[in-house]
Length: 227
Image 1: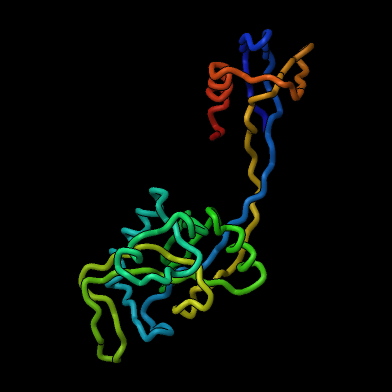
Image 2: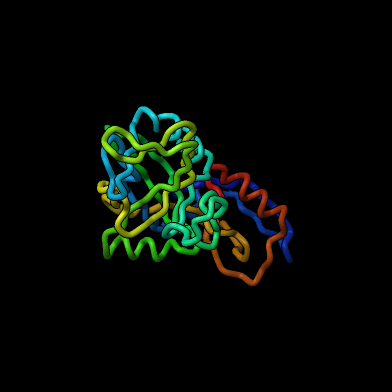
């Protein structure tokens, strides 16, 4: 990946001068994304619960807003403590993923999930070598028995999260595929000396500590890259 730095002069045990453009500093890194079905609607699940789409439209909309704000975390497995306070809490010690995007397609809530957190490696391994699924943690103002003798939520409904589980309650709520994406980023610049003789840039590892002003100058020039 090509980026430009123009005329940065900073003293760091000497002078660091960068006067050329087009310095190739990109580093490739692979990242895995999981594509699962999170939940199905309008059909009974293994626990004889039924989630009608018309009742779930608002909770799904609210959950998508949570995902878009970067709060779509989930744990590896449901909590063993089934108290309301624990079920309403996502414990950082057990986080295995974050939902990056989700959408309703027919009667299925599909998603793009990024494995992160302390349990991410377990989630990746289990998904690659076995059949992993996802299961919802949900609160409802009431749970009623419908005319088919199935339990369904009623009143105010709140989706807390979707946890990664073995044998989910919804028959369709399994990982459909795993994608590997190669992304480019710029490594931390601390400890690098950049010289550009005759417009040809070389990067050498030096025992230097770059001051904050230089690091900020470099970061500001590389605006498309998030550090």
